[in-house]
Image 1 (spheres, rainbow over the protein chains, first blue to last red):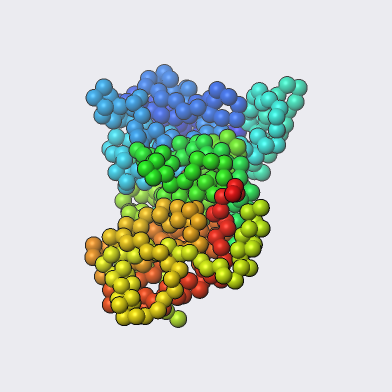
Image 2: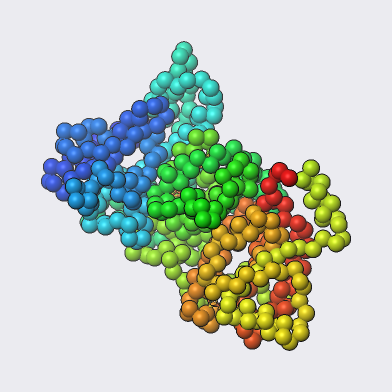
Length: 336
Length: 151
Ligand code: SF4
Ligand code: SF4
Ligand code: SF4
Ligand code: FES
């Protein structure tokens, strides 16, 4: 089979469903992926006409979480009075999760949204490829069989997909949107809960405090506080992010590691039980920081502490919007 | 440079931790008061900030305290079920649980940040727990991980 064939099948199903939705006037606009304008990327696109469906694509560089454009709703998706149009959204599993969670958090009205679901075959870890290529200029990226082929001036390099797939996609169990036929066309599933051992971060967790600190320090040190990770995150829709608050400022805008660390710590706190594990944050990081380990930890906390997986449906209240009298409190100080 | 200063600080026998305590107005703050008027001794290492409810304690406060150089943080509120605002402490408890897990995950000593319940009638318990917090933080030594590298 190979991912090349998979992608072709996914593309034809997306186009077919998109055409159907537009021709039956079920939606006014469709937001999806189109060919990237720079190599190793893809570009979001909004289409309104049936004849444009051929611009929609899918490949393993479609790392953006399209739910990002729903909250706050971008002007292109509103009518002249500022009300939401009927929107079709090309939805891999994690876009579906974000749509569900945005609905629970009352940021969007599911009545206006129709997902175009498909069974996602994962995205590549661009930073890993970028890092290996180094300074050389990339002119073209294509997918053939099971390999990502990267070309430049007089050189060509092959990256086997199974080695360069994003770590989050390796452990992902929600590959198509968890939704009902009422708000999804194409591939979807209704998931009640998922089973996850989180063995991928067990090793990290078993390290000593100093080892963990050294690892985190090494990983985050290069962060330039550009906030692209926040910008790309579908769940970071706050009007005034803590990053931009300055009365008081919550962390300094300096190159000190303390400030970098504080940013990541607080952002992690905000995304506990809300992160949908899409990996968009890591994919957009200009310095190639791998934030997946934080993402997985957030999922683990939500699952183990509150038996919750974000975005499985549009009803369950996420743990941080809720509380119970009998919550675990093993960390509270007690008299000896 | 910084490191040697801190090393010296650590072996310096006179070093005492500075701990910031966020106390709920309706219970722990009064508990601290009771400990005081009952002449129960507790270490002078804590500096108290009175808050209307443990639910008012945003995790930012805790993290910013560490960044600003406090060696330890303790938050104390009403026992579950006794919150003046009914559920402020229950909401707070979930936040604290997550903050504590994240700090540990990132390799910050869990003992830097502590949470406790103490009612207005529990002067004795307040003193005992504050002694415990002070001991924990003292054993950890100065808060170096959040230290800025210039001096
Ligand atoms: S934190 Fe990262 S992985 Fe989680 S929802 Fe946001 S962009 Fe996706
Ligand atoms: S980092 Fe926090 S405050 Fe900023 S947008 Fe994300 S959730 Fe909102
Ligand atoms: S995208 Fe990367 S460099 Fe920018 S703030 Fe996030 S982690 Fe730091
Ligand atoms: S009033 Fe004391 S914890 Fe809420």
